[in-house]
Amino acid sequence: MGRHNLKTVVMFELVRTLRKRGFWIATLAVPVVFAVIFALSFISGSSMSDSADAQAEAEIAFAYTDASGFITPDAAAAFGGEPASDPQAAVEQVRAGELDAFFAYPDDPAAQPIEVTGADRGLFDNGAYEAVAEALLTTSAQAQIGDPGLAAAAAGEVAVESTIYRDGQITGGFTETIAPLALLVVFFLVIVMLSNQMLNSTLEEKENRVTEMILTTVNPTTLVVGKILAVFAVGAVQILVSLAPVLIGYVFFRDRLNIPALDLSALRLDAGTMMVAVLLLVGGFVLFTGVLVAIGAIMPTAKDAGMIFGPLIFSMFIPFYAISLIISDPQALIVQVFTYFPLTAPVTAMLRNAFGTLEPVTAGIVIAELFVLGVLVLRVAVQLFRYGSIAYSDKLNPRAVLARKKAAGSS
Image (tube, rainbow, N blue to C red; front, side, top):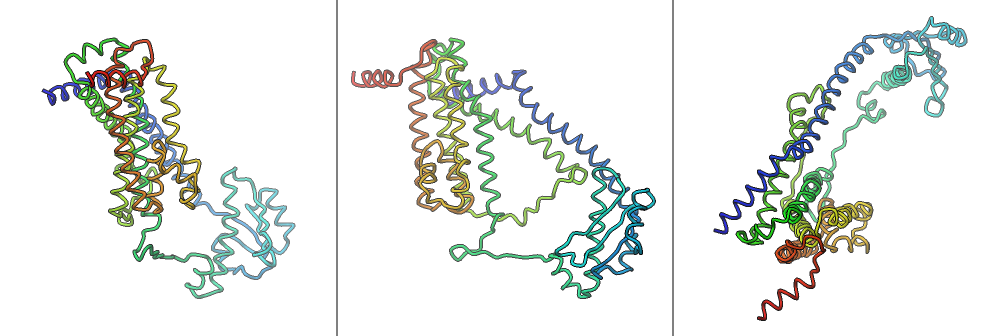
């Protein structure tokens, strides 16, 4: 009977939410905005590609003087330049529109700037003059060096492969933090997208004044668990719908939208780190869910609950104000407080876990704290919901509920 009631509650809450026009308007608003952005980026990308092709085919006719002696005539001719015997005359030609640009290379290009005089080609295209002047100097210098390896080293075009050890094991560096930080993003999405629905799901029947009729046939625990499962399913629908345009854009239009390719082979996954991250995510969700259900049971209306809901969600973002300390000095007092305080513990611990500063003992304590407090708060929330579901106009007093339950148990 209990399983049947649980299935009934889940399906009722899920179907009721999915049939609301406002839910789909709010859910589809995000992918529609993404689709519009992708469409505009696609059109802009096409026009920018055409413009880039046109610029690549266009030649800049310029004159130059070289006090450094670095510029080779062959390289200058390849770029479309020729030496100028009279710098002032070259400047006058540019001013009259008879020449695109004039470059004056100083004695010491490392300490003195290259003087560029050019005809206006538009705000963005004017940068081509500086690019050509610098490219010509670099090409000439590399040609004089002669050795391709030495030239690449002088230009800073050197690849570096690093191997970093931690506790005798090779670490993946930044790539090792990507997956745990991705779970932190999932935690934020789940809480932000589902918390308001979780809060309203426990208040809706109370405001409609039908809760006492429902509780005559459904156990409060079954009702609350059913609502939680239904809201989680609704959140999964929202996340999938929101991510659909991104996935479609990446799969079918990645080249036109200039989306970088994902090289999953470079992604390093540490089993212990990922397990801790998943447990912190689930534990944090359980704790926040219990708190939201308790708020919904205590407060008579959604408006009253909103006064507590805002600060509760804000507490999730507080650790980011100390993120530099969380990364660089995890033993700082404020970081320790954030690590063990229940409402800031999930985010702080997930950040420390991602950056490798969360010790196994600390991780175990925080995970146990989140799950134990989460289950306790959920149990208390169910009792508050049992007695607060018929408190239509007044805020429920938790002490009175506990005293009433204690008196009922003793009798």
